[in-house]
Length: 171
Image (tube, rainbow, N blue to C red; front, side):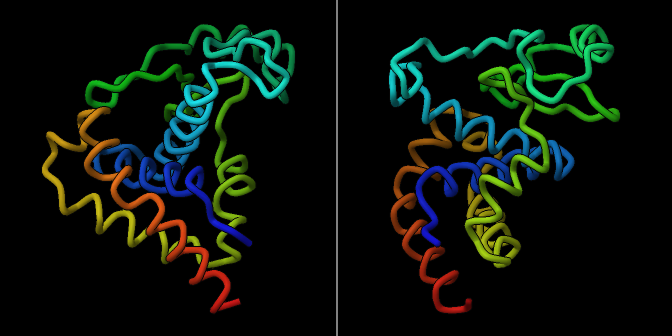
């Protein structure tokens, strides 16, 4: 299965968030959230049908949330800052989880959309992403622009190819 730029972005962003102090589940949620955000931005915040992409959550439309839990989530809703980058979040089980497009980016969503592309080799890719991020000072990791321009953009295609080959060769 092919590993694309979307999975590279999510993996590097998760590594970045984890190094900056988020617990692993929250870091993965952040990574998936940022990958979705950048994909939406690339389309001009339009859905595939040309409709406006819902960046700010509508709690009534969030999938998989029991009606009785909506009010609780609304009370735990906040804008979370990771360096100079901000994302909508809710607190669940004492940790932040991120929301975009009326969906909470859960650990299950990360496994389905990101880890599954690695055919059981995700941990190896994630460890490489951590090592890449560790090469940069905290200022680069704290900056949305510098992270994108310095960490992600120069190696996105190289990592997509490398990780796709890793998955293909070791399957």
